[in-house]
Image (cartoon, rainbow, N blue to C red; front, side, top):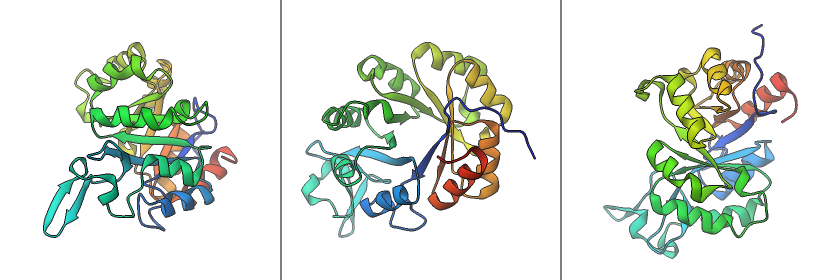
Length: 241
């Protein structure tokens, strides 16, 4: 058996990707509630802003109106389909005792998230991980988001400066974590980012062997559609989440 490398977060965060989407409609309050009941320690979604400034959780960011597809940014919250929840409704329904990973889809979404989280009890911002593929936009927001955790989400092939220089840039800029597809990570890369005190997050882990491999590399968070499998493997590999 492969020896497990140490993670910097102990235990690693178990993020339910779009809620327990393997068992319930994705990005719905039902899916988020179920994920937490199954033991997930974190929830994940994309966050968009409606035409009237409400932060909402949805993957595509578009809604259908007959034969038309409208961006959520052009629709008022009251006119959205009922299954699309607001970020505020997530907290109202599920509480706030979990980590939250949000893929931020626009500059306006940052402000909308801050408005909601600032109304929550102390500590929620520190458990909120804001993910963005645009590193420059992420760095520009660092000073205004001092209480939040920032995550650069990208692919290894897109790193033009090499992983070591990239890890150094994240550390220098106050970005907390690097989030890549599980196929991009290996134990050496995890150790490299940890050397710069940058956390290693791994997504799209749908099978036991993928979860086992990632956890044994020492990653700090995993993302899966299958909350039950994720928690079973996490418990087996590192103990109770």
